[in-house]
Image (cartoon, rainbow, N blue to C red; front, side, top):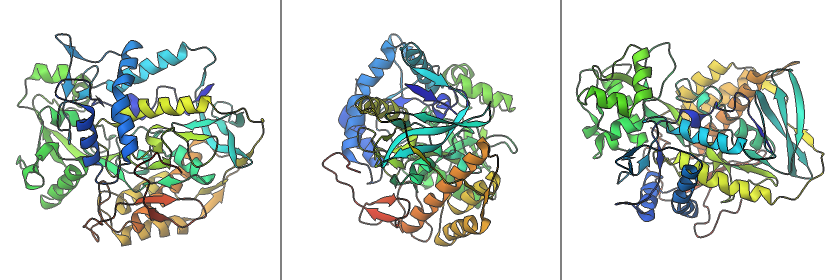
Length: 491
């Protein structure tokens, strides 16, 4: 088995996940409550069999991580549980205060490295998939050190490439999150679903000219308050749950408040908490803010919404299978239907461990394939720069959308043209995938004439009575359709 990473093995969205991992372990929580909270956040579009698998298998996967050495925070021998937006109870485990993703990723890496027959390759960007007789038989990787492309043959390929946050000008995602898996899968004909549902995190640190560092929802779960630039709290005007409202609601409220006060940001205030507690509970966030000249114990942090998570992706069944034989997907690159139209906070890490394990088991059952296959890729690259694509996405497919903006996105990409490159590099392949994903987001969002979850249209602010999923395949019309709700998905 071979694990290929386009950067270091450690560089991923999981590595930077702060808040925690949601799971119903004991106390006043149970599977049903977790399931209901997930369905409520998903705004009518969750695939219920997938949600059931998530919440029921989650505790077992957490125990497995603990057995492998994961250290979640405890107090007096009991695991600490935080509460985040749209959760009805405190069920979010965390590690190192605000370094949960780092702890989980490190645990999985140490476990995997100890297994025989498993190899790792870094700085090799997978650019295309190999096909033979309609099935995926491997992939093509671009070796960044040797600057050459290498064919990799396999019985099955798992896309665990994360989301596409780098599609946007403002994002909490690392630079590697460029929608690579989704772009590659779409090009070989795999179904992509619900790609228009993008979750914008309400509170990214806003310092002009600097990256948008995530200020975890756990801060608001622990009592941080949102204020406008005049120091006034405002969330009570937008939702009964105030700071703990769903992320899409909080993001739109912040944008509305910024517009009404002619400001570039709002403020996240934790100064009413003891300084020692802030440093202990959120050590990574505290030190990072301090490096930006902001002492959270003494002053509120300027924040602004940023692209954070992609609810849609390559459609899979409950075992990670896509619509193309031999091709699997898991994590943010996949669309299992767990998150529906809006992900419940801290469900993403749980989805990764639950459905990653399911996909791994299914892949192990794949029969051997002949070592052959043709590259199925498009060697034409968009002429638009990465920055131009990011600005286009933020303006036309951002927090608030309308038909004119999304039509402008599609028209600009088409008019921007495409070009052949004699010696493309990693950045060119990433740009190709960003352009592909942006077109998919715009096409699906334009077709969805309603506002639901992370998709908000100013020209269609109401919600359609029928909850339908977007479906996009290369060479076929984009459609909205209903999934089966009583049996596993059958792509």
